[in-house]
Each structure stands twice: as structure tokens, then as C-alpha cells.
Length: 247
Image 1 (cartoon, rainbow, N blue to C red):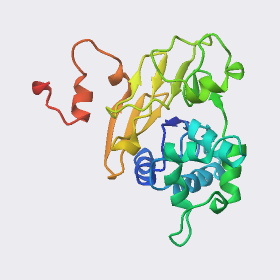
Image 2 (image 1 turned 30 degrees about the horizontal axis):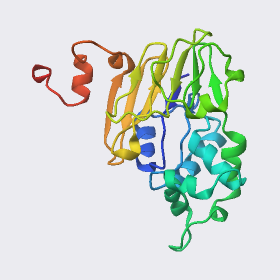
Image 3 (image 1 turned 90 degrees about the vertical axis):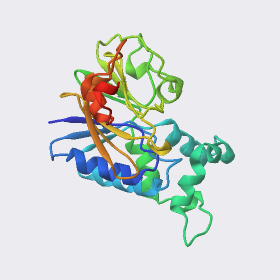
């Protein structure tokens, strides 16, 4: 069984479909999506629909991201709608609009709301890894983490967690399109909505797959992204299409 972590999708259904086709999930694989399924990209509705199908098939463990938090807060009148719209919510509503009209919250199906509110989790862990959307306090158990950390805190060289497990997160988008691997903490939000890539990590083998909205694919290994003081590894250079002699 593989544990496959997927970074922030942000409505980029083409990249998501391309990534799933490349990874070829098997029936006994578990897919852990790290949140931020909606906003910014063109097809939040399509992404949620695909995730619901994966969940119904028993393959998906879906986390909640800060963009889902904002969306739910708007629905429950705890956040101004304008605040969410300015941060990508306008694209989400557009994906649900009917007959070319301006999208409304009421256009979103009940089963999509149920998925965001009742199916999505705040965190998930295995024997060796734990998964959060944004970050975690190093000295607090996962059940004790505040929402400000789980959903909002940026990835800036976090300390190793007291559990000894490796943290896998998204949220902090990498304009380079490359994951960050600190060994004890890995960020795989590679900015798919901004002409970047959507990343999937097999946490056991360390294999990495990426896809973008142009339906392009590339692969690497997570150890290729350990910070190095002089040169990128030859495999990473090959992934980027760079001749090692030119690096």
C-alpha cells in the first residue's frame, strides 16, 4: 500500500486529472490531499466532484485547508463574503454558476458542502508521517494544535516535531514549482494555479510526480530536493530539462 500525498489543487482539475493518471492509484493505496481544493483556479466544482468520488471509493483522506475554512465561514456568516472573494472565492463561485450567471453560494450542492464540513479532516498521521495543511507547533500533539497553525502558518524552517514523525504539508506556495525537503518536514505546495505544478509524494518510496494545467508531467525523488550548498542533484537537473554541464 502506498500513502500518496497531494499538495494544494486550487481548482486546477486538468493538473489533478493528469497527476492521477501518472500516479495510477491502486485499490489499496491511500491518497492524502492536503487541502485548498477551491479558489484561484478555474474548476473548483470539478475538483470537489473528483475528490468526493475518490472518498466514496474508500481511497481518499482529505484535509481541510484555509481556503475551505474561509468558504465555510462565509456560508456560516462568520466571515465577510468580500474577504473570501478577494482571495480566490470569485473563481470558485464562477465554477458553480448556472447558465453563465454570477455564481452564488446557493449553487453549491449539499454534498459538496458536506464534504468540506464533515468529510475533511484537520490533520492525519501514520506511524512515520503526519499531514497538515499549513504547519504544526513542534512541541504540541496534533490534537492540541491551534487552527492558526494548522491552516495559516507559513512554512519557514519548522523545528522537528516532538513525535519524531516527518511533517508533510502544503499552504506555502513555492514559485519555483519545486517542493522543499528539510528531512523532518516537507512542503509540496508547488503553486499549480500560478503556472506551477501540482505535486504528489509517495511518502514511503520518496517518489515524486508533478503535473500542470497544460497536462505536462515530470518525476523526481524527494531526496533530490534536500537543500544543497553548491549544485542541484543530477536527477533534479534532468527533471528540469537542464544539462548538468550547463549548471
